[in-house]
Length: 429
Ligand SMILES: Cc1ncc(COP(=O)(O)O)c(C=O)c1O
Image (cartoon, rainbow, N blue to C red):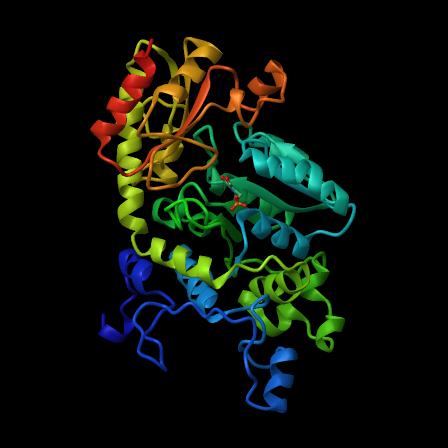
């Protein structure tokens, strides 16, 4: 292959995609363009930007050059056509749905999702008249049965938070295709280093950049990546994309922007009007984190497997739910969708129940007891005494947060130190 045709590898893209030395100053790191707005060349230039006839910067709520580097980087790591950076993972989900849904519409979601997404779908979206229908990733026929004339999308997580569930992306994508709706995959826990949902038929990928992509527990952010695969005009059910937009002199976004129309709609209709813009400072922090994503994710996954294997042999432990473990229910799916490793987040059940969970989180030192995942540091939480405290025991069990459950997010420290810390917590008197 001639040099000009070389497609850079994942490690190279993680460091370089979207970035070049600053043309004005020569700065090698991507500058933080900490500005709200951008000067127009002249009146015609301004008019063409506002009319979507030219690409360029207007106002940081709609776009910013630092954020643009982050967008191109994540889109190229995922193999999508375009990205849109937003203020949080939840904002990414909301903007995606805003493009697809009108009041009274339905979308199908896997019931094994991050608890915050379950809340967002069950409660906040109800206020917009967007109705979620839950399906079980362990019973794919439940997705098929949930399809109705009102269905506008299917939403799943690749590796689900927190229980180590791996969803059969390819099988669900076939159901979405048959129903004529896009498949949205939250790829937060896997990152494109471990799993690339577009290779298995996803149409849109969303991320909480807050977790492993940023990777250092210092910045909240979200990303939408357009896979460029969905025909928005065919079904006539996505008016935001397939009908003339009055706010842009009658432009039809899908006709004008083709295979990156979804990302454009997210920016010029979603982000512009709903407003959750990412700070360029956070974009810079997350970009810096992504440079080491392949190194970190491999270490996270290797450490997690070692810790899960160790925990599964401990007398204090009743069960370990980590798809990387041989014999785990999701091990075959993990080998297919995340062959380099099954990520860093999983749950364990302690024989001593609630008290044992409280004892463990109270006696570890290297682990931080907090409500986050995807930090370089090892993190731990006992949902029953914290995030899920208000629920009844039955509700806790239903949510995968029974009294005995502890969630771990394994960091990139030395695995022997992580294991020694857990041993101290498990054996404390
Ligand atoms: C899988 C998953 N998706 C989405 C989110 C929401 O992201 P954010 O906190 O950035 O809004 C989270 C947060 O924990 C998550 O774990």
